Length: 239
Image 1 (cartoon, rainbow, N blue to C red):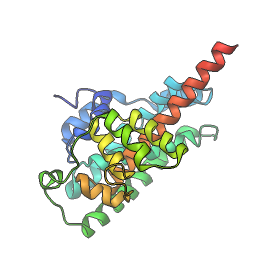
Image 2 (cartoon, helix red, strand yellow):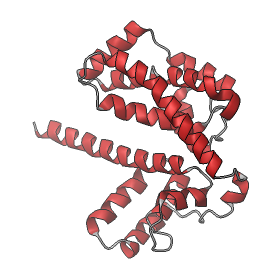
Image 3 (cartoon, rainbow, N blue to C red):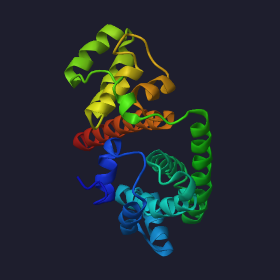
């Protein structure tokens, strides 16, 4: 499968894409997202007004900047999937919290360079602490794959708090694939009744701690987004 066909295809398959990305294909793919400064300013104004499509286009317009900044560090660390997605997530958080700030485009563009440099520094530090292991060896230790129904059944056994159990069930349902579900199930103790730290989860699945955090954060964000959509629909139907 060609994961570099489009940004949408790349993101939807992110957890099966190798951590070391093909720089040439990556640069070519994200070039389709490029916008001029005036176009970004226009998208930013529309995003402030609540246009969700414009917000997504505004965020995507900075992905080529992120990749371009990563290119500076390519000789030392290559193009890392974890760094790229970590930057994309932090960019989203920054923009969503800054939508009503003046000079949104200017502030965001300057934030990108600092953010990538900071993520690269943390990545290098983590690599220095943890020698690289073969991913195939790590995957041998992953828990066996269980269906969503099997995992949901385990929630009532492992989690006594009703509200927490409901949140975990929604997060599992929000996962995009089986591996994300297995990771969260392991993280919340559905496998053996003992909740795990992010580092323990990362070690078990052969990924970085940052990638494990990203998967958990994205599942939470999808849950919140789903709840908001349902509320908006309910409000609309009750009008």
